[in-house]
Image 1 (cartoon, rainbow, N blue to C red):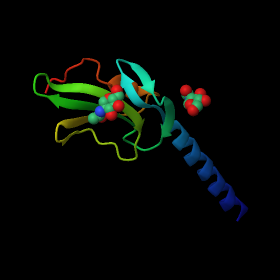
Image 2 (cartoon, rainbow, N blue to C red):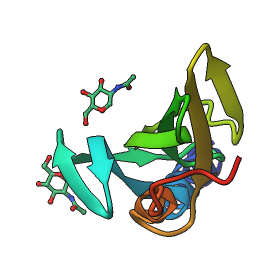
Image 3 (cartoon, rainbow, N blue to C red):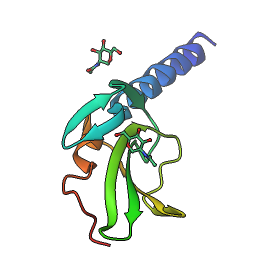
Image 4 (tube, protein in one colour):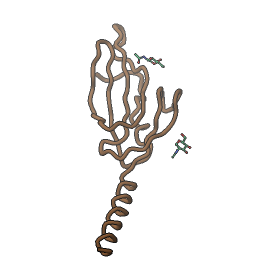
Amino acid sequence: MAKFMFLLLMLGTFSLMFFQVQATVCMVCKSFKRGHCLMGKSNCTTQYSPGCRTRNFFIFSQTDGWVHNHTELDCSEGCYAENMYFGNLKTSTFCCKGEDFCNRYHGQIVKKDIF
Ligand SMILES: *[C@@H]1O[C@H](CO)[C@@H](O)[C@H](O)[C@H]1NC(C)=O
Ligand SMILES: *[C@@H]1O[C@H](CO)[C@@H](O)[C@H](O)[C@H]1NC(C)=O
């Protein structure tokens, strides 16, 4: 019985270590522009497989097409890499993991989107 309890304890310790290794620290930012966080800078930790989330927001203009407005960085349990359209608003989502603060590198750097 004691042997069984010990095994259970070891299993618990190992799974805890495993999850700590898997966790990625992500940057949180409400408004991220040109590599800098202008509003609501923080961080979060995610253990979920899609990892850190980067959402680029674009607004459609008649003269310039899709123009980058701002980028939001956070953690999401369900991060899906996709483009979504809401009328003249578009969001382009990226997910990353395995490197702390990796989501800051997916923010739109150039002003205009290629689409
Ligand atoms: C995460 O943010 C907290 C404050 O919200 C700060 O104390 C901590 O140092 C940050 N962690 C990292 C790894 O930057
Ligand atoms: C565009 O960015 C500004 C901050 O720079 C923000 O206040 C505004 O809500 C954004 N517009 C949209 C449609 O997301």
